[in-house]
Length: 219
Image (cartoon, rainbow, N blue to C red):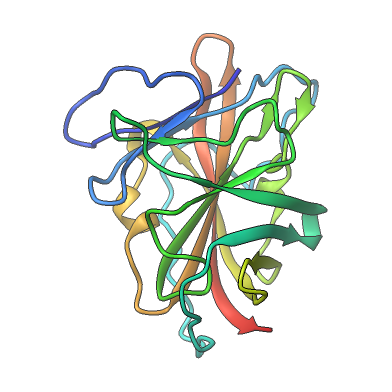
């Protein structure tokens, strides 16, 4: 089962319908729960991770690559964790929630098309399920990414935006620093998001794994 929820940090909201995300790009707090968690070892987590709040890492001061113009997304590749997956656009439903990729499509990521395109100025957001009822899904290994690993986003204009990971964190869903994670930057940034932290059958995953990356080259 999967449940993705982004909620306003000032007030509680109802539980989201199964398989959706709620918009936080302006409001702040993200609560994300996805996947069944019913596998022996569980997904890898960032080093020394717990589902408590951690400070989002700040971008290093290295010179960023020249931004690209807008283009929809085609695929995501993360060689370090053997991800090579198509990307679908996800947008808002009638209630203002962001649709998640279909949970039955294990090897499918979702790009939120209401934010920046990967390679464009601003913060692009790509989400994926950690697992589903049948086993690990596209972002199962996200927590094992480390600083220096690369993420390649192939766009539909034929260009590829290459991002370098500068931090991977687990945040408690009850104290998710949405403004730090989703705030727009003057240079191209990327966030990869899935669920993580401790899992319980009653509450699901306690936190979200977030990988922070910056554009370093294009081709």
